[in-house]
Image 1 (tube, rainbow, N blue to C red):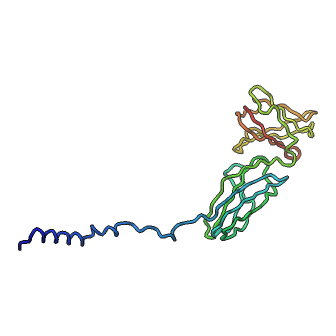
Image 2: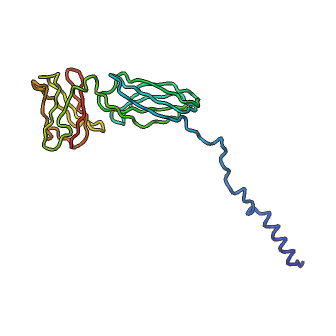
Image 3: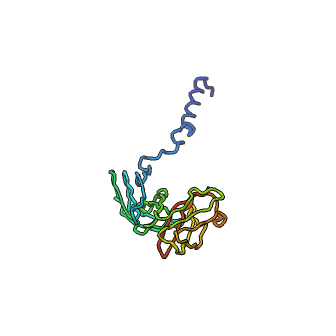
Length: 225
């Protein structure tokens, strides 16, 4: 049978129009519906830690909360091993600002860190950044080291005037929480003793000087250049 050029063209268009090649809509993956969008459980406005006498105040605030079960405050000395300090119930669901407050009644002496863990009702959780604190105890202000900073070749004068003639356990702790020096020293009649760089054997840096005498803690900071 002979077909005119016009008939052939019409037939070809009809054939291609019925093939899957032109079913473009079926080739695209379905877009996610709004119900699949995941919301953050809370918006944390702040998380702060401040020394308050012999305790540490821990305060935080949220702008909103979604299915929030509870908060856990943890502390650490080395940023690796954590212990629980307090557990506080969350608000569940909230669209307004909520302020929270807990206290560490027995802070770790010297440098330590706190973090806030938030847990949903389904067990999922988020963790805040670490917040540093330097707790000197009741006697931090009576300990002095000089000169401060210390330059190479200078001895370090450690003085605790109220403890003249007593033996003192001294530690120097770096910013990572590692003990870089520890030894027992004896204070003279003025409550002083000298330490040399060669005795310490520690590199330049910022250190927390921790001393213990008869169960009491004393401390201060020292910069070695």
